Length: 305
Image (spheres, rainbow, N blue to C red):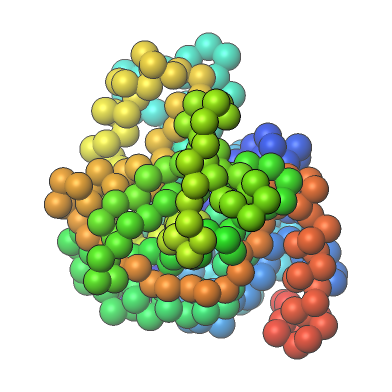
């Protein structure tokens, strides 16, 4: 029987953070952000989760996460590795960077037999985000067309004080995305939010209130087919132009589908504040915010007794 599936991308190497940030402790009992997302997802109605990880962290990840939640939600695993490539393609010498979020989801394709939500392991999205996404997907159990959804956040609620971030900057009309542009370097400069595309030689302002994607997506099986079709095309270009760092990114893939008319994306609004640990310096503020929510009763002191 089909049901909404939660897909959690947890294979990133955390180069800017400087370690395995998926498991960085933030809760009163040392729980990582991921545990709070699972608590919110289960509360919203999700009964199945697919963790996308790397083989090298499997034992630590299972001990820290799935062994603690397996009695509360069905847990499955997919593995994102550099050599998970279509026939005829090879990993470039010296490539260590993962192939990106689109490749991560593609690595789980055999397990995706219904509508699914996709999130990052190291982002805190807020309880309401999981509620609205579950309701959306639960109404699409037999939908195989390109009807997607995305939880949108106001950009000022998604920034760090400790460096630059990447965000999918969105345009929408009547509640549907019309375009999404991946901005790879966004920073706060005083009261302004600005981005650069030429290593800081010039900056352009992004107004407060601008809608951005935090990789909280809702997809039908149509998207999995789009990934399979698009990945070889991406590789053909990237292996020539940027073989060591090119990434197959979800916002860019979605935007291509919007432009081509093969998909539409409904925006599910969230006014919650996003929390994440892009950099080590972000961790104290995230710990304080999460633990305050526990102390105020938004979460129990022990998430999964």
